[in-house]
Length: 320
Image 1: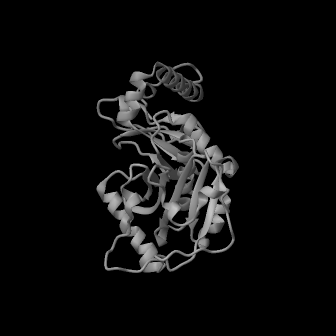
Image 2 (image 1 turned 30 degrees about the horizontal axis):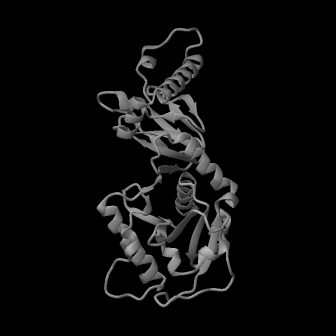
Image 3 (image 1 turned 120 degrees about the horizontal axis):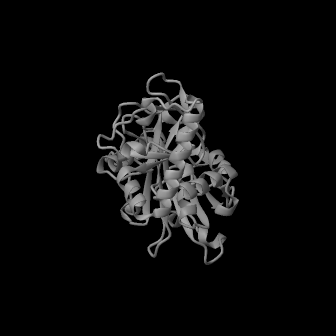
């Protein structure tokens, strides 16, 4: 089942985040006292410096979330738990990471690491030096895999929590290579800075023939293949850095005309139609790069399927 990870922007998704927190932190973990409300939020959720990353399932429901807050004059959520500032150089650019929660049926490496990968991308894109994370020790191994280290091994308590926490500090320059690579590839390939990605397992369908196309994709990790619209035979191979799905955005009906299937685990950045077309319109370099990519892909298709130089009619209209 594909998972979409993006910034929460709709009222419905934000409400689902607050309710998921209540489910995980109050009903299951008993970390907070239940006060009759069915949501968990604080003042930092209202700050422009805060962003909510969400993991969405195929039904467009929130199944995981994490909050990131850039340092600002009012302070960060992590300041209320531990004095992280005493452990970093004075002029460091800081970011707080917290409210990490995943619904029980989705507690897998796919969702958890996907959310943290997007946090790493956000941190590097915003030139963060350190991420401050007061977190439950139960997810300590996950944070250590990213590169986070506890400032102290002694658990700390605050009045409104029923559980101890460890103050994890992540120096972005010491982040795990996998997360660094993901972040750098996003920065390099995601020309419109949309903090949105899709995660597919091997064999899952990325694009389905006949669907309406409202976005293009760029592969950050993994590989996929385009299937011939008539025979379903592999027609083109896609790998890291390849943009696909863009031709449907230029057509009048926006219909996809070929299937694209993941041939390995794939992480692909999502390029929404409006922002993508605006970027192409205002950036000649992006237009030339896109045309070059489309030309190379078409040559590959023709070399494979038309060795005698005769081009079947269906190739002239194939869009993927």
